[in-house]
Image (tube, rainbow over all chains, first blue to last red; front, side):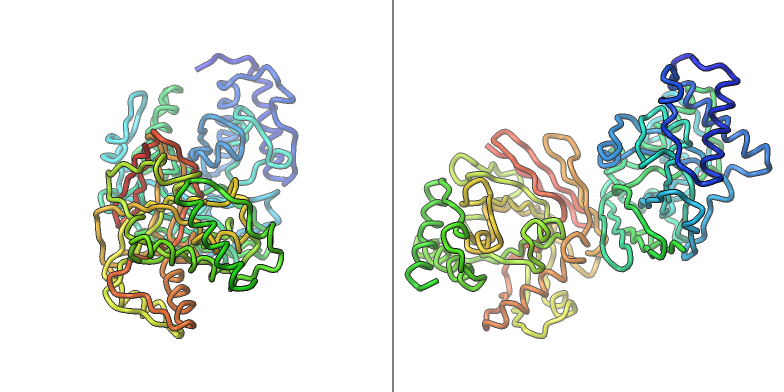
Length: 265
Length: 261
């Protein structure tokens, strides 16, 4: 991993700036405009600083997520590598629940499969086999993403600093064991207001959703961090992200994993 | 269009197919061409194929995705006929230079029937009860119209742009899978190029077959036991050339592959 070009003070200021945009719901210009010299290490340090700020205020980290893992997403966003983010307690919305549109800037939704681990994963060198062996169960999930950047436009460093656009998520209640789901071929169907708006299959996530968890463990490993046992991990959108409006309801069906539904109010 | 024009267009399309050439869009030559005219032209083209010794073995449903419907500005599917000469087996080479002009491949779920289905008034339950099995399929669509410059009437007249098709070799009872959510992954030369799921075709592949049975039923034409019905693409069309190798896998059903030479 690259070294830092920003000092601790700049990193703290950038984290405060991006977190304020999230909490107070306004758009900002992308961070690389403010700090053209920033490195990937700087970008991740800013994200981890946002995480530290939230934990310091008493929020609990409830999981991790991978972003920009599908070819459709990378193409849509013009980036070439996936990224990760963290999830905290207030991001959680129950299945069938309401997402408050007015707390968000320009939300989009994507269908994902989530892994819950039963063993710690520490990269480098984590493979799909390690991930499958360490997985307790799978759950269907819908992630609401909301970039703090103007018009949802960014580059990879900027989106990493912005906690990979994380904001809200819902999980379904139907769990499955990894050996019972064909993770490459299982399909998802996303409907908004009763209309099918996107379909996809597991392979859209880096060829296999477990590859996404392996990449997360290896990226964590670069910082000397491990993914503890019991971690909830969303692996990335199987479909392109779809914009939503206030009043929209959505329903996502997963082959062998039930459904997740919710509404924007 | 009058009978003579219909016959002439059908003949031109048949001859274009046999000689691997393209013709100008019919809709550029006849501005009054109706959907009915177009289907009559396709029947003339079919008549020529049957006269040359081909045999009908099934039907295909096209224009089932929202993207293609929007492109053609129509809000219903279309259909064409499958003949024995169009069928290829899993792993068999598909010679573009002998049979195709400007081919594109699309992954589909094919239905094989065990009972006749005669609409109108049929429901998805009737279709499922009449289905022997579903099987993975690549349809290789092709157009006898210059540069695929088709309007809905052009593609209908041209046998719904059908070219050739390949069936996989895993037959699955439709009672055992969820056809709406079953996922599809298409790989070209070892790279995943698209994914989709059953709902991409009119909300469900079963809806497509039911639509076809009811549509043909209005003319007294049944879908017959033993026929293969291609239910419509679940992914975007992919242009192919000689040397390409493609695989489609469908969650809970299996896979099919095709090698273009």
